[in-house]
Length: 111
Image 1 (spheres, rainbow, N blue to C red):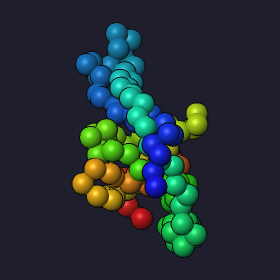
Image 2: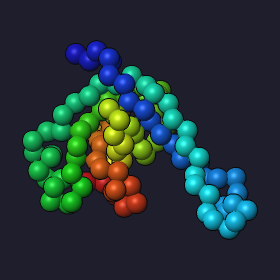
Image 3: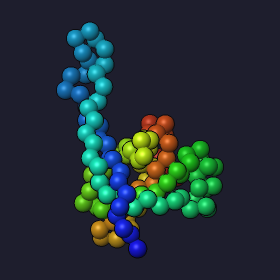
């Protein structure tokens, strides 16, 4: 049974108001973050090794309340940032986030 005692920070990037600064350098996107309650789950043995074959290792799974998740593709857990590789609807109230190393963010494809 889920206890909802863990916390995860969900991070959304918004494009900057101006693409470049006064010196012509590209502005970084603005980050908006929210910390929500979650349930940490380990990646299953089978899924972990199958994901290694694709080069996108599943590092963990997190259940969050559907109302708390707004499509963020970056998450921070225990001081480390992850890319949300895929989502899975558990039930009407819960969604599972599969996390992988942040370097896969630019690839944006599922396992």
